[in-house]
Image (cartoon, rainbow, N blue to C red; front, side):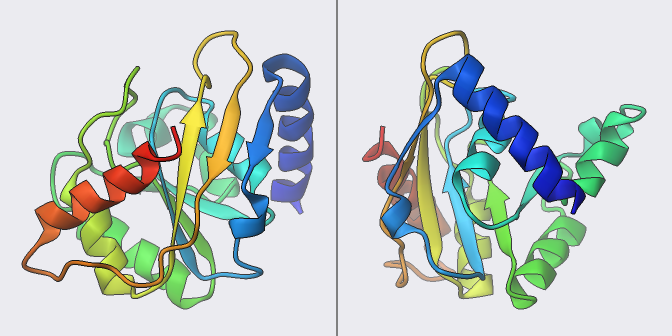
Length: 183
């Protein structure tokens, strides 16, 4: 209930103040589970994805955000869960797998931080995609930073991955290319 209210308010904000446009809604699965993989330009990225997709997205967010009084609680109420960056965080992986097993949608930003241009993807998203064995929905975010009109471009669902557990670097490059095609 809280998520739906927050999403409605955020959607109006994104449309009025950011001129948000969404392309590719026909590519979104009717229901979960699926893994959303997107580039990361700004703090508005999870908001833009949450407003664009019809399903609640449970985002992996850096642990430090949960330490901010009030804001950490808000993130939890919206379904986000913490991840320790620059290390293998088994608790975050288990949480993501649990949500996916429950039929939910999990969102991840494989660059690991906000960047002005598309950066390299870490292998964690590729590993999670293999382990979860769920479809992947690539999303390209444009102009979420600054005052330009922002755009959410949703790609075609990826059901089969062209890599295995011994080729996670190849998997990270594959996912990056799918997102890059949308930008």
